Length: 265
Image 1 (cartoon, helix red, strand yellow):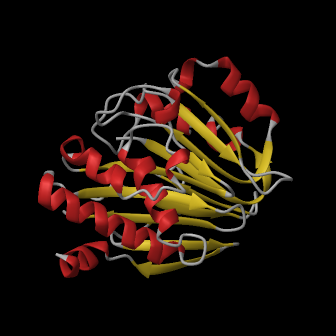
Image 2 (cartoon, helix red, strand yellow):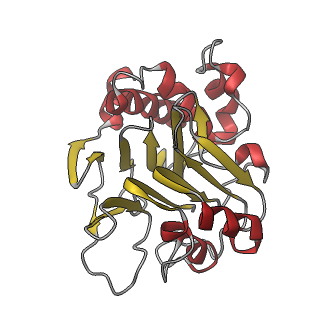
């Protein structure tokens, strides 16, 4: 399973989330404590927002702990909104185009989890991406396909509803042509102004998700695993939740794509 971390708040150096904490994202890439994957060595990526509407993007296929360029970048770049991801493949090839986050226009997206039996219906999933968005399809992952379908479902105007409808379409395909678990996901997404996150699974094994407001940083961290083992004030996001982060507040709403896919069936 992949590991990821996102941040929204006062600008900080990316290293304060990515590499400096005791259980930073780079540390998790070879020593995660809350997933079954031994190491996350299939690539990494960063999407960060600065003075322009579109995010900057840096991705590579090296293990995160072995890339000196990554350590130098996160020590120099400051941002008030960024997404960072280390990848453990669930089947697709190790390539830069398959590394998260994925971006399109102002939007960035990253995902941890799987769509059950995706290889059996990849062509059907590709067909759900409309023609005007298909040129943005760079890789072969289920995650990028979910992102592009969510964009087609109206992500700009309705992030929760669009992601819910996109997830429902993938669940329906997995039930028809794939395998259980039909969907497991934690995902983070942003348009550069707001940070959103979701935790969901069609079974009882939703990947973990936590958030914590830092008075010192004046920012919110949203993570797969707590960044420091001695910090006891991380809040776990309940399964079946869609979160909208604004300053030190979190709006948690129900996320029920399984209900939509059942109705469609």
